[in-house]
Length: 288
Image 1 (cartoon, helix red, strand yellow):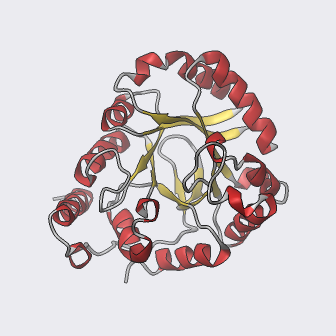
Image 2: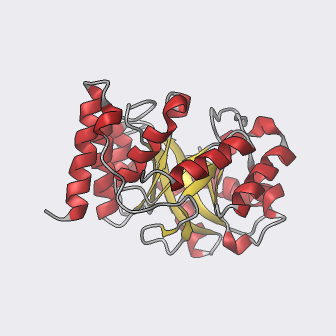
C-alpha cells in the first residue's frame, strides 16, 4: 500500500473512531514529517504558493462583522502584520466578515506580491459578481485578488444555477484581476458538486475530527475533498477548531488536520497576538 493511501485510510478510520468513542486523542495517527505554519506550499494547479497557515479574519463572520473585525482596523492589521513577520503569507477575508479595510491597512505596509489574498462573494448573478470584484479590489486597495470564492453554496445543482456568476469570475481571471477561483460550501451536496466541477480550482471546506459545523461527518467530507484534490484542485481547510468547539483541544485538531495528507493549507482566525503565536508554535510541534 502506498504511503499516501495508508495515511488517508488511517485518518478516515480515526475520524470514524471518534464518532463512536471518546478516546480519539489516543487513537490519532502520528503526523508524518515536520510541518511549520510558514511552510510555503503550492495550491493545486493554480500556480499560487503561500503559507500553510492562513490568517483567518472571519470567526463568526456575518453581516459585515466578525470577532476579528471587532479588533478595529488597526488592531486586526497589526495582527496580520505580526503573522507576516512569522512567515504567514495568506490572508483570508470576505465581504460578509467586514474585514476588507483591515486587510487593506496591512497590505499598505507589505510587498503585495508576497501575500495571497482570498475573498468571497455571495453574488450569484453576473452583474452582481462583476460589481463585487470591482468593489472588493477598491476596498482591499489592490489591483487583483489572488483567490475569489463563491461564498456559502448550498444547492446540489449550483454549478448550473450560478453559471452567470461563474462566467463573470472566469472573465476576471482572463483579465488578470483574479488569479484563481473556487467556492466554499455549506451542504454535502454542494461540496460534492464542487469536487466534480472542472471550474472549481480551490475548495474551501470545514474540516475537524468531531464534525462540528461541517457539511457531513468527517469521513464523508474527507472522501469528497480527496476526490477534489485528486482532480487537481487546491484544498483549503477551515473550521479546523470547530468554530471554537475544540478551543481546549487545539493540539488534537491540528494533528488531525496535518495527518490527513489532504489539505494544502488551512485557515484559523486568531483573535489576538498571543493566540496567533500559540497556533504557530503548536503547528511546529505537532509531530510530537
